[in-house]
Image: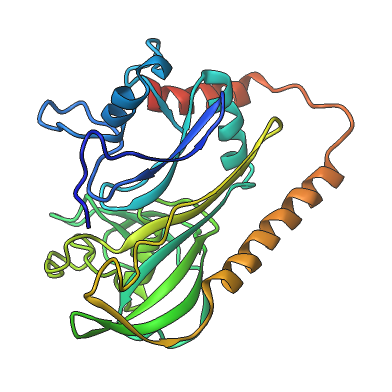
Length: 292
């Protein structure tokens, strides 16, 4: 439960084109606000000043997002070309991600697939939140899918909780938090989606555990150590094992590898030239990280 600091940056992967770090909980990736004294961007500039790109606003191109309260694997592209290759993986859904979480209550089924569409909440006072289709004020809901593996049951500070492995098959904002909350199993410590009632835990118990990004030049594959263990947080007391984490991860990884092989078989011998429209979409994606 060590607090974040400018020095406290755990490196999981480093190549000439990419870094993957283990983001600390309750730290923003980047920020323009003068009062944000600690961000991942500032940690990176402190640790790797020679890798900062002066042509970008923040110095580094983050390939994807993690919420302020979420910890775990975060990929950073070290040049524009590498960012484009990572973007291609997210666009074509060849990236595999898996998260660990503690959720309130005892999950009823060992395996579940959630397909609730998620949209923007337009109700007064809730516009910072997302919501599932059918909720009053839900705007522009889009299809979403999350697979859930129940790993362990137990207690957190005496209250029943379940440790779960979550695999998002889509990438909607706050998807995992919204899906868990909609099922009646909100993530422990999720202040926003508990409507400001779950304030006791020291953090939100959501962690980006596994990240796999296949590119045409390298395979990025990392795990960020599991923080939800009794020896690290004595408030978490597991009482019953439902599924071994390694077994659940083997299933997820094999599915990702199979998808990669299928794509290789179907890939045409000559690479199709990127259209102007596709390139414009890529440039827009890159500019959102580099120029805002």
